[in-house]
Amino acid sequence: MKRLVLLTALLLLLTSLAPGALAQDDGYTIAFVPGVNPDPFYITMSTGVYQAATDLGLNIIQQDPERFDVTVSAPIIEALIARGDVDALVTAPNDKEQSIPVLQSAHEAGIPVLTVDTFIGDGNYADGEVTFPISYIGSDNTQGGYIACSALADALPEGSKIYVTNTRPGISTTDQREQGCLMAAEDRGLVVARVDYNENSADMAQQQTAAVLQANPDIVGMFATNLFGAVGAGNAIQNAGLQGAVEVALFDAGEENIQFLRDGVVSLVIAQKPADMGYLGVALATAYLDGVGSIPARIGTGYAVITIDNVDDPDVARFIYTSNTTDPAPALDDSYNLAFVPGVNPDPFYITMSRGVYAAAERLGINVIQQDPERFDVTVSAPIIEALIARGDIASLVTAPNDKEQSIPVLQSAHEAGIPVLTVDTFIGDGNYADGEVTFPMTYIGSDNTQGGYIACSALADALPEGSKIYVTNTRPGISTTDQREQGCLMAAEDQGLVVARVDYNENSADMAQQQTAAVLQANPDIVGMFATNLFGAVGAGNAIQNAGLQGAVEVALFDAGEENIQFLRDGIVSLVIAQKPADMGYLGVIAQVANLRGVTSMPARVPTGYAVITIDNVDDPDVARFIYTG
Ligand code: T6T
Image 1 (tube, rainbow, N blue to C red):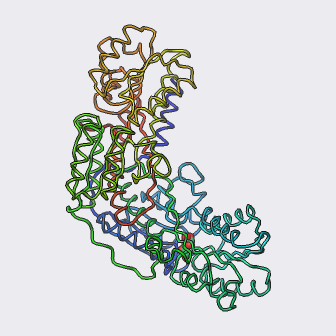
Image 2: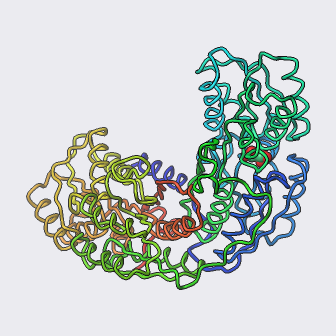
Image 3: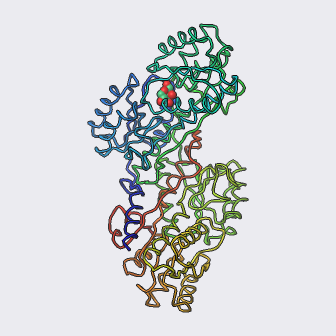
């Protein structure tokens, strides 16, 4: 039992608890402090920031450090904290270590911090050196450096010497790009003859590059780790007439760097996605302020790799940075119809999810068309979705598919009709929308259900003697969530010495679960533990145990924090209730759809939403109780 308490405490720690419930509190003020400005990279980032602010009805206070330097940015942030009216801070810290204290002060002043582009500490905000920032949204810079120097290796003979112009040690992004380049050079047989630091100055990079290339005619390749270094490198090569003689890969798709590509001075430009960073930074800060705790600690924003062959392809060219701020597109209105089709209703789980859907939709000013299947059954939900497609006025679909395989065709039809599909709670195919069986849905937002089943049956193992027999009441095979919970429970039982005596399927009916549970427990008095994989099974199981007077004699773990299940906990009938976060799923699903409309391509293919594990000891803690579902 002690281990159960520990496990519960640990899970609660892992469960990031956001400040408030899903309240509509108009007009948050979000401070945006880029790394430096003017810089086309951060100007492009600001287009995403202002688009999100327009969409969500927020105020932005943007303050630009005039140098990429923590001694410039820290006082700016201190002054923002002192104002007392900043609700959240989105910033690109100038130094991994030296930016920590001022961001910690913001955090301690109650201002949630999200970092974009650069990170502090080791960048692992889940369980690394610094964990107070909510999220780090930016490129995978080690990968970016690796891509750049692999391209040089592809173009040059083995053993060729290359030169790297970098900014300054301590900047997370460019440190990692240098490291990625060195790894590629080692793997692919290039020699990194020299690395210089240019203090983020194009002039200094130009002088250094000119001097190095003149003194070392055997250097035949070079990599510039950011926009200013790239401008300097391109100018030096152009002035020395070395185009073609030195193979060049540049980071950052500023307009000058793209011109170098067109002029044959460089062969590769790596575009980051700063607008995505800005949009998601602001949108997820807002979600957090609205009580959504399931913000990913890390969002990788990807690249567009630009060469002379694709620079005019509009799908690539749209990632070229802008040097001018542009007006955001107007906010959406109620002519934007988002269709929301839950798994079934009424069901407190999906009712709670719809609270998240409507909270996000209200911020965005869009219209929700919710249509509820009356059974959790693809033969009921598919015609509903077909009818929605036929209307011709649906802009996007957020849905919890009823069956991993059988829901595919109708969702594919929606996708083919130009309606972006995002799944919440359940998935189709194998749930890996990045490169799995089915990849057309944008994102799958939901619990890690294998983990959830594992937690439940580990708790039973903690409370019961080894070798004890347990019973599982599940819904129906084919439902992604409950399939995985059963699987997670079986894994825990195997790992921890429980015997799963029987699994029954209750067709998502509390009555059937109750009858089956009563019969099984009566016929098998040696069954001393049970797990119900969802809300309806849990209600049936709880009722059966209560009616048979078996409270205390059978150890019970339930999925889903409906009010009846919480009452079973209070009445001592069950010892553990696992609350999912359906409101987070709904909120984030809506935000992701509108981000997609705005051209954001960096929403992760999978967003796990975490759990609150509820026991009699924490059920009245408001930070836990807020996850109890509403009817
Ligand atoms: O490369 C970007 C950014 O990723 C880096 O952190 C700093 O330099 C840039 O802003 C480009 O100037």
